[in-house]
Image 1 (tube, rainbow, N blue to C red):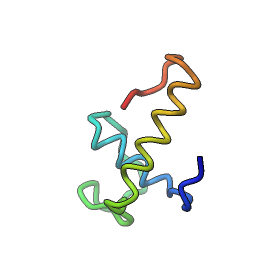
Image 2 (cartoon, rainbow, N blue to C red):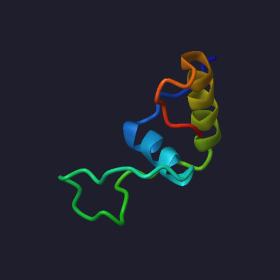
Image 3 (cartoon, rainbow, N blue to C red):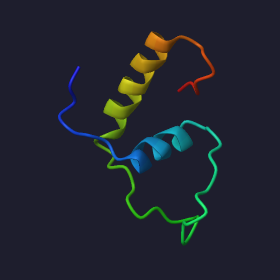
Image 4 (cartoon, rainbow, N blue to C red):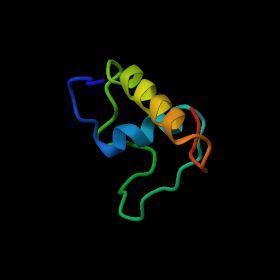
Length: 66
């Protein structure tokens, strides 16, 4: 299913973080408390849906769940 956009990796990381996943902080990140490119609120549901579909396809092979 096409969503009409290509998500930035930082958007995906933010969605994981919002779902409660503990992620590492990149060593080159200037300020760990500020996101340079936050995920737009209107894109978050589509990213969550896509990640859930991937999880269903892959099964439970060590993937983070949403």
